[in-house]
Image 1 (cartoon, each protein chain N blue to C red):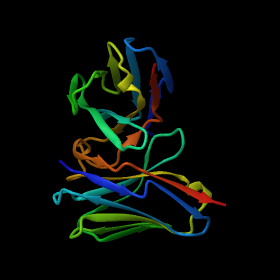
Image 2 (cartoon, chains in turn cyan, orange):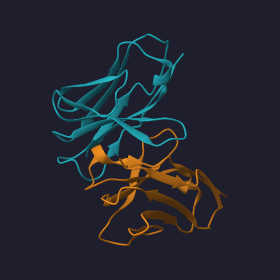
Image 3 (cartoon, rainbow over the protein chains, first blue to last red):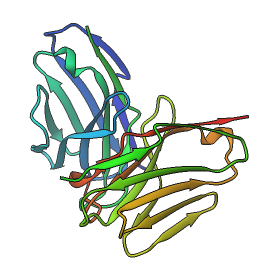
Length: 113
Length: 113
């Protein structure tokens, strides 16, 4: 069966420090991968999606970047965190074409102080 | 772009009663409407979805209705149980594409024993 892992689960970082959140998917190949941000009281906002290795599309301009160095690994990064980067970050995957059910990881809560 | 409004933001019901969550969307081209349930500390999970070629879909105690003319869709949970307590998100997209999937702001459902 397919599983998705995200880490770390929680992270407290000072303003201006770097960020690296990692997501891996097991049990499938060539998944579409997504990074979402969930702000308190708001819906899920798509940040990045990837249809293959080194193929990243950004949905919103921001202080973050994403990379996909391997088929089932998706990394969310920042060189210098801002206070506004605080939030709950979710990685998700889906099979093949960009349709159908999204499978989410358990999320990473980032607090920037 | 698409705009999805979700109401209410919080909902408390007695165990055994029904719960209804409503969403409206703005883009008449949207034709795929999933509902996700997010339990505390976890990522969202798909519970039911509907496509615009049907008006209603049921899965045990959960049902979704769609009114294309009015551009709104609703989630109905009957005989609520404490384990139904969670945040529920509606979403809308064209063709099921995650790149065009717009989420509502979520409803915190609390089932009181």
